[in-house]
Length: 132
Image (tube, rainbow, N blue to C red; front, top):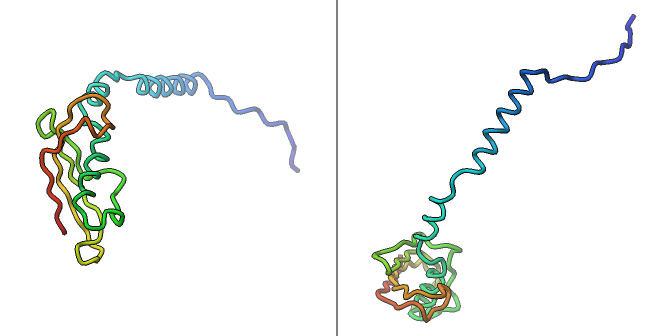
């Protein structure tokens, strides 16, 4: 014979409650950490639009610029020697014979300041485009 006695609701107890509070404390403490170093890194990062500007210079050197397919972000974008930004990336385009090939470029731009997405605020220092 089975007796159907009402079940007691699950209780956490004092130790369980302390454990939950401790875990929550560490979760929220990690979320509200010091962001000053992240801001400094962001301020020291090369201009984000420099990749878009470099792609424009690369396309000027191609026989079939409308056929070029670039990745969303470059392989590398870093300060060469401030204010110069070096952008390195690969892309696919047609070569002089009209055959689609993998290509690469290495572009150095001088960032003149101001709106980072305005091409007038950059000066082309060096550009190498090669077939891979």
